[in-house]
Image 1 (tube, rainbow, N blue to C red):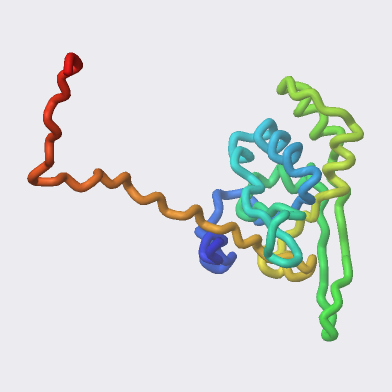
Image 2 (spheres, rainbow, N blue to C red):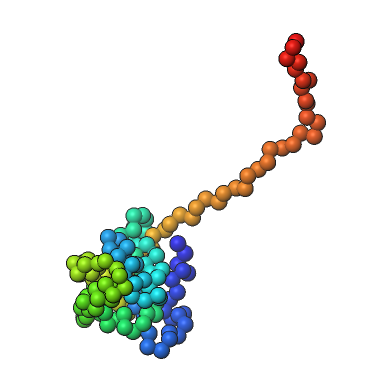
Length: 176
């Protein structure tokens, strides 16, 4: 998958007023629920977590990433972390917010989504949500984009060559 599919933060257009930049990485085991919850919470949540990640860049994907400007309300209800990198390259979590699993559960229930408190808790535990540039967050977690092979091009059907002088057999007389 080409790197240009993920726009660096510095090239991103200015967000609508009040939106915040987040990089959201979810473990593969919880990505289906994350997609459903995000789409339930806001129309902008449709189509999230479509970029697969793994430690090797090969399938199977172990994580999925979405990154970009989201409504500020999302930052208040999802668990977030703040990280700092030391000179030796190690990362230290310097802050976090727990999110509001009750608010997420209530919104899902109000929209008719059948989800349990335990499922939301598992989703929150499987999420890495930061304001970091996606490449930095992926590097911190030791993840890279999965190289999904492009499907082989399908050649159009080829008509068989036409013989300009076809040999037509003599008709067979069934009485002979």
